[in-house]
Length: 219
Image 1 (tube, helix red, strand yellow):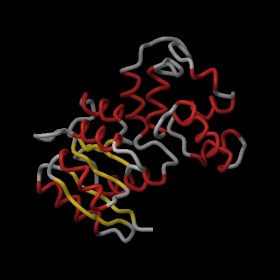
Image 2 (cartoon, rainbow, N blue to C red):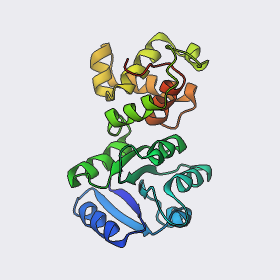
Image 3 (cartoon, helix red, strand yellow):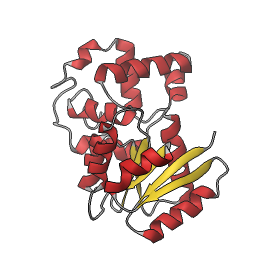
Image 4 (cartoon, rainbow, N blue to C red):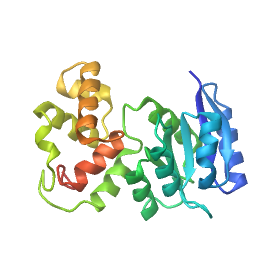
């Protein structure tokens, strides 16, 4: 399968550099470009990408609002990776809350960019888990486990264990080894957790787990 990528950035040089890196891979291809978040819905409808690399800061419509519009359009949206200059940018956390699947720094090495694209498509692990956990923990209320959460009571004990391991950044295979179950069983548990939390993906589930106090910062 060839992974189709849409590039969204107001700097032509950035788009050109990313396109060169991505198109050099046999399993990746750039299917389109956009210079502003306002152009994203039309570009997605035209090119049907699997992944959108979305700049956070753009002149007319930023990546956060573009992400919200894309997810609100219905259907099956592409995976979204926001691209930013600073890891602690408040925009990054807002973009993740809006529904982005992860983020990249503009100084990220080419091989990590390629791996990030593949990671979000396969969806079996968090993209850069330590950074996402740090951002989520910084915005957590600081309550005890389960504080502010009502959905946690709907999780089975095994689903709760799986969510905690997801928050640590474990892949399905790693969770399976830790819990002595099959990867398919883990995939089923992850699906149940996302459904009960009404979360789009692992990133959204981890953010919710921290924000409601289900997982305490530093746990």
